[in-house]
Image (tube, rainbow, N blue to C red; front, top):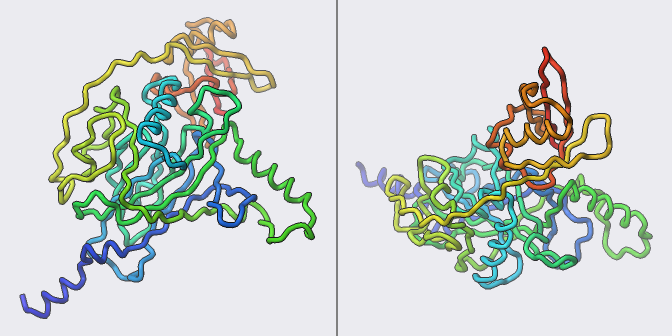
Length: 390
C-alpha cells in the first residue's frame, strides 16, 4: 500500500479522542408541561405503560461526513432525579418490585416496532430499569419506550409527594474499553395513570387561559400540541455510574437475543449492579458471565381486573384465581353465568386495534385493576369473547 493511501485511510478513521468530541442529541416525543419556570428543567408528562418515541442522532462538527467506523451503544434507563445513595435507590426499586403482580414486570420496556428495529440492533434488557442497543451514527435511531412505574409507587405512605424520575441515555464508543460514556443526557418525567398526562395538560391549559395578558411577564406557551418535543439536557458528570436494578430471581433471563451486551461488566453479579464495560473489543470477544444464584419468589396467585360490557357504564370486578387463560375463563364463566364448555375463542384487542389470541403469556402480565370492555358473541353454540383494552 502506498504511503499516501495509508495516510488517507487512517485519516478517515475517527480516533478515540475524536469520538469523545462527538455530541449527541436525544429527543422525546411527548407532552411538555406548560408551566415552565426559567432555569428549571423541562417537565415531560407520560402515561404509564404507553409507548413514546425517542430519537437519537449525532450532531458533531463532522455532521454530513460518512464515518466508516460508526457504531455506538446507547443505554436508555429510568433513574431517580434526586441525588440518592446507591442503597436508597435499590431500596426504592425493591419496594416497587415487591408490589408488582409478577416478578417479571419491568420498569422500562421497548416496543417491537418495525420502524424502530430498522435503525437499531443488538437489543439487551440489561436491567429491569435499563435497555441497551447498538446504532449507527451515520443515521438517526428511533426507539419506542414505555415507563411502567409512577413517581408515587416508591412509598407506602399516602399523600406523600412522589419521587421525581428521569429518563437518562448514556452513549458509549463501541470499541472503547473505558466504562465511561462519551455522552450522557437526561429529561425529567412525571408519569400518570389512566390518561392522566392528557388531563394534566388540559388542566394547565385552562389555568393558562384564565390569566390576563398583563399579568404575564413571559410569553405563554400556545398549546401542548406544538410543544411535544423534549430535547434531553446533557450531563457534565460522565463518571458516576448509574444504579441498575436486577432482581436475582430473573437475572439469568435478562438477555433477549443471542448476542450479549459487550459493555456489560463482569461486575453484573445480580441486584443493583453498576453499569461498566469489560475489556472487550467486540461482541464476539465477550464471554457470558455465569448467572447469579436465583432466589425463589412466589408470584401472587390472584389478579383483579375491571370489565364492563359495551352498553354499560359500570365495571364488574373480575377476580382471576390464577393469572392464566384458564383463570380468566373461569372468572368470566362465574361472573356472567356462561358455561365453561361454551366459551370458545378469547381475543384481546389492543388500544391500537390489533386483535390477538389470548394466551397465558398475555394474562400473566396484567396488573391489578387493569380495565377492559367485554364483547360476547354467540357463534354456533359457543361464545366468542373479545377483551378490549381501555
